[in-house]
Image: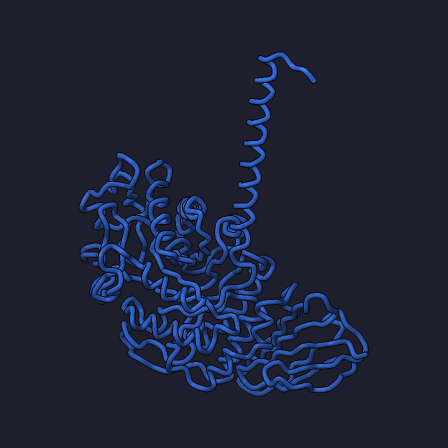
Length: 465
């Protein structure tokens, strides 16, 4: 077909534009698809907070990474996360004066690891050498950050990378963290506010970070403040991570994110905290059941409500007034923690020091049949709460089988009875005890295991052939 020269040029130009738009759209879809698949299952790993507070060292991080590589990675444990205050050279002992202390920071107000604690960070290398070490083990590397811009950056009037603005221009001094004075909030209505978040995400991407735990994003003081959910800064950080072009999981912390924010938090992060800092006490564990019940409808690939870390094994080694201890949870209570976290499909982050794990805790953390419930189950829901007896269920993908978790919150042993009809089953069903890795036989119409005080049972139920 013959076209006049001018028209032919216009057609060619149009085709170029169309091809370009299609390519951009395809790239956009690829980026969206990639970012939407950052956490297809609940992340599993280790975080330094429960053991070392804000004072962990590079050597301790490496020891825990080594242990994970040798003993846990084969079961899906892969994230190694440095928790807070890695930019302070010395332990922070007074929570009211962090903002007055010197921090490791570059000329653009971006925090760097303190080199006396992380020697490989010297020469402006940041966390890249440590991330490379973790990656060499086939593991993933994560860091904790605080919401906002460092007060020291504001005090020193440091510029925001890529802009004509300075830290004091973007600082929201009326919205600081309620428990730490290290940072000011960021005014993301200003382009330079977004640029600051872009600059830190770019830095973390250069370091090779795979997981960002962003603190003070969803804080619920008592009574809750109107600004306790920082949706604007959550969006700014999420957008910055996308711009960095590195797949980095975004975990929001801490506290009880209100379920009214479910749609927003699911859109802009992969996991978010539903509880206060969870420690080794029965009262908090009992309270977690209600929190899991509320958030169960929102469980799914790439959006995981987070019941917090597992304070098991040896914890509080450094940085806590009450000193080092082994978890105060009884063995039955520890089984309850892992059972609830698994049937709820919470992210699993070990808090206890890995190299000093005791045999009992190791058995809990390496039970592949229990971990499969956390990683592979579907339609997770609470079946009932009858006084001190609670039952949860989930489907085994691709089968008619069910996972069943039963809990006894009472102070005495008790039978917890579950009718097969409550699981959508009938007749005779075979039961396998996942904690004991033992087949229990077939039961007609119902199942009534005897559960220890504060204890739990976890089972796979299959219609009998």
